[in-house]
Image 1 (cartoon, one colour):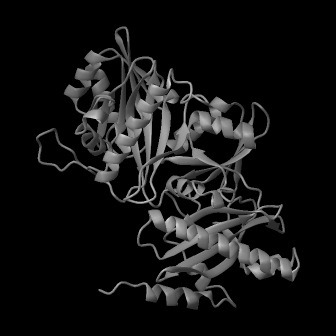
Image 2 (tube, rainbow, N blue to C red; image 1 turned 180 degrees about the horizontal axis):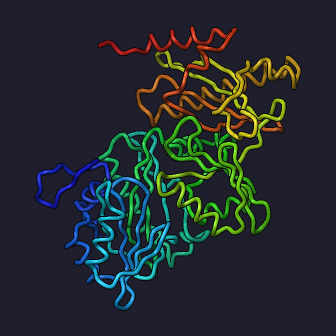
Image 3 (cartoon, rainbow, N blue to C red; image 1 turned 120 degrees about the vertical axis):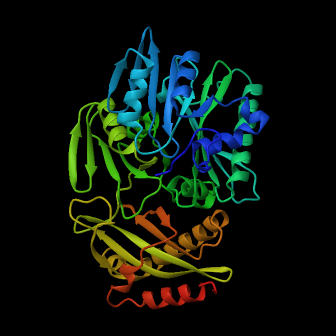
Length: 443
């Protein structure tokens, strides 16, 4: 557990977390003017901010959990994703917080502008290709479509953009390996405040999506993806009817769920091989938030109906490796999902791509499809290398839908290779090991 002492104490601050990022931005006058007041959580800071405002937020130094504190008349209302409670004194509130909720890690406390619900904040994703590149706004997830354009005048738009870029530049200088930053803003009456900054490193699926989708040549192969927020999830379900939720950082299919809109008011959650029905969207989001979003940051992705074998969907694992300046495809096989599973991470069988394609199309078309997959993965490898310096191996999961269209589902920079080593009649493991040995750095 990270331990943090009061200002002036001897413990080292975890600069990677929220408070460290806040301290970096505090040193810049332009950024400082748009930050909400933030402190490490201690009793005196809680009492200080309660005297200043009727709305506070308590967050862990690392992670997505948020606790809301509201002062209503003579009561203090405490709101989490699981419960609500009222306290008559600040001492009662503090004792409950420290004994029941804030027990495993250090937290910060923030003073928020009045009357702005936490579900109505705006999120801006800023991206850069490399450490030497300029930052750009790659994505806007706002409370309403077009909010950025609806600001009172172009000067306000320019000012907000200038602040967002300044925040990204300062954090990018402090954390040079980070090329994707999500900035959470409150926008109200032409004013705006930064309430959170979330760094997405090389392994983040959100960072990966923005790196790939910014290229026109790859954009059509990447499933539409957004940060998982209350508004985005509702919008995706209305548009696509079926969506996938994935943790930004995760492997082996852990934490991935599928959500289907059965009607305007009923939904089905598919977790692993189990299905549950939920009757309203608010109940659905409450369940998702409590079970998943308080633990990890998530993305939403349009669901792709994959081609199947014996009614079991499959995708194609492709390994690309680098030799000097050139990327090569060194391994390729098909993962067949287990019965009742929608992801192939729990594969019931491994097959050659040739065998699968042979059953559905001609030899000529099979060869062309394989070449298309190889070109797609090598193109993506060159693009990802720009933002992930030093990588020499990537594992791609390529999906082919029922219409034959290819989709780049995700990429992994530390791919599991056991499936190639134990797969009969496949010499890919020899090639993969050869490239691994070539790329080993001398001790």
